[in-house]
Image (cartoon, rainbow, N blue to C red; front, side):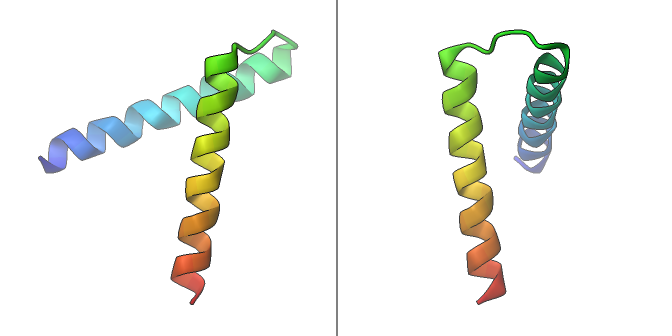
Length: 53
């Protein structure tokens, strides 16, 4: 199960990098990419606030 979680995180990181590269190149992002990015940012913000407390 640990390996699965590591692979899942690695795939998420690849996705983040792909979105960043698409933005850098000026390519359009799909609605699903934008939705996933917003959810990812919300989770990261939540984790920052929880760990800071």
